[in-house]
Length: 88
Image (cartoon, rainbow, N blue to C red; front, side, top):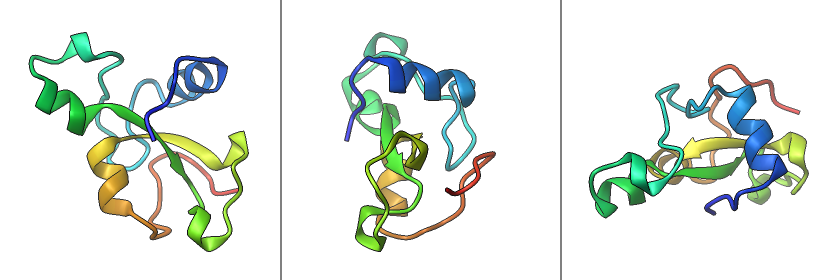
């Protein structure tokens, strides 16, 4: 899911220094930071459940991290590790 602007997004963005929690590469902060809508679709930051909902992960702020849309999709329901984040 794409994160709406707000306190949780801003907090995670700051903690992660704008880097994807899954691959560690920079994420664009808005669609205007990339040249094309197709790139934005893949690179946009999304909320990722550290412990997936399918595995009983809660919808609580401490279970969220930001990840590129493509990285989040690749991770899917797995509990693959995150760069620089501890699981809760």
